[in-house]
Length: 147
Length: 147
DNA sequence: ACACTCCGTTCACAGTGGTTAATAGACGTC
DNA sequence: GACGTCTATTAACCACTGTGAACGGAGTGT
Image 1: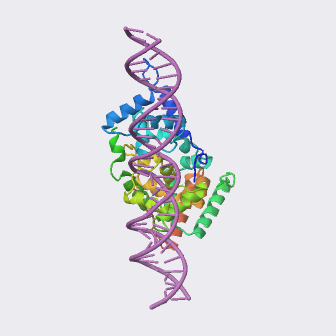
Image 2: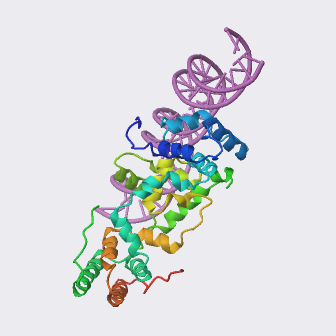
Image 3: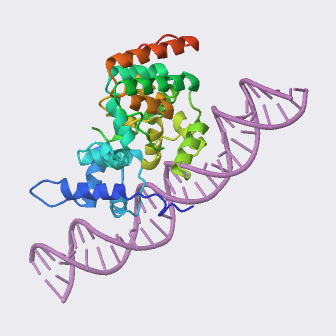
């Protein structure tokens, strides 16, 4: 099964090229692929990746590098490996963002932990009580969520 | 820091097993490898990884998964891909992992969103109701949080 | 012009990440 | 006991990641 075009990737290529374009000494131009590959291999003391492969990654001809090679590249450019994942993580839904906000409240965190394990029946009852509380405090009934 | 430690023996395996052990609903035991693989593939709409391969990762028989599969796993367990990296700075507490497990339940997610914005007084009342429900269902009063 | 060097690019192939199929064991149930 | 269903485990594969060896082109020095 060819995965050539199925996964909307290319994010690695884009991020890599951005690193090449931006991360280099002000006194000189961007690093070249062989330069970076050599530096990485030299520092590691063994071959981590080839210049050819690095070039293929930049061109998007190879799209799914392994954990270790991505780490080495992030390391060379002095960024967190997270840099290559930002896209996927950044596509958090509004719901996730609101969840993160709500969970900063210790009371709510404890509430979640205590609710976990209850039957769906109990959860429904609790949800109803929350709706009552919302009504009493003049809040809108419920915010519908997708998914 | 050092490149060679990125593939240090069993880092991925250890982290993965900790996720399996920690991130699951309180009402049931840990997820199985086939369960997780199926859930990931189903959500993606195409095959991302096999149950066998996931098992091999857990056992340390395969150590260097690709970008995409590592992302899928982190996503399933509700943690950042950063979790699998050696030089991870802010290690997740078990509380956070238990939260992640609970939040896989849509009902609980909705409950959190609806609770956010309520007065502390209402929250206290809701917390009390949850404790009653726990008692009725024979669960321990409250799960202490390490913090 | 010529030689030299370095980079980008291509391509066939090597190596390994990842899959499929099959077996054995655990658990429930009829 | 026998059957069905689930998971763990193994081994034989396959596809894709990753490599080495080229070739062409651009710059540099003679």
